[in-house]
Length: 273
Image (cartoon, rainbow, N blue to C red):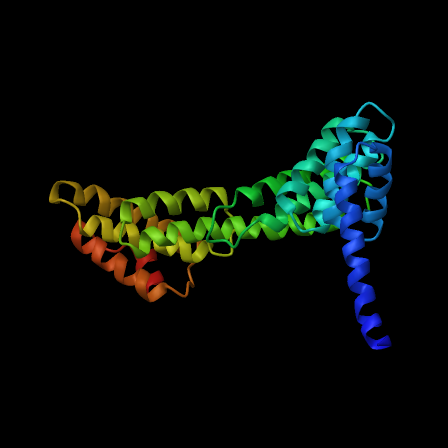
């Protein structure tokens, strides 16, 4: 009998607690709701805290407690890992209280929420760009914050992801044999991300795209496009004379000058050896 009582007690407590919370939600005692919201937040019960805060914030928007209540609401959603909502609430808090006591942390966390929402490189990187912008604002506005270095690390990581996205997009056109589109995408990516770790590969892909585009062009367009290939060859060899793609590049060069009916100049011949 005593064993049954021990089992029933938590159940009774849970039912009672749920009943009290439901009554509280329907209550018009906003002071009590505000107090309970703080208690739930302190206990890590973020769902309950956010529900109550959602009911009371507008009631206290003209009071000295408004900033704190908005902060607790954002923190509650962050605690629930609802980063899209939390991010909007942090940014709204900073807009309302740009010099408030939570401005520094809210600015950082708003950018961090975008970081958590940023997907792998293959997908759209809007959240990555938003996060980078947010962290840059944080670094500028709170340059003495101990979190500046952490913000820089996030920026570097996200920039690498954006570079990878740019590379993957350009590579996709190449793999699909859409060489005209590949040339444009590779040119733009190389211009926008000149220090990319994919630079050598992308320059080779661009050169090969130019060659294949020329090879598959109408006769009237081939001379012009083979000349573009040759020009790009010079640029590639100047930057990567010992490239791992040298064998393929040599073949492109030989086929190109054969079509253009020109002879190798001495320095180019040396590069081919």
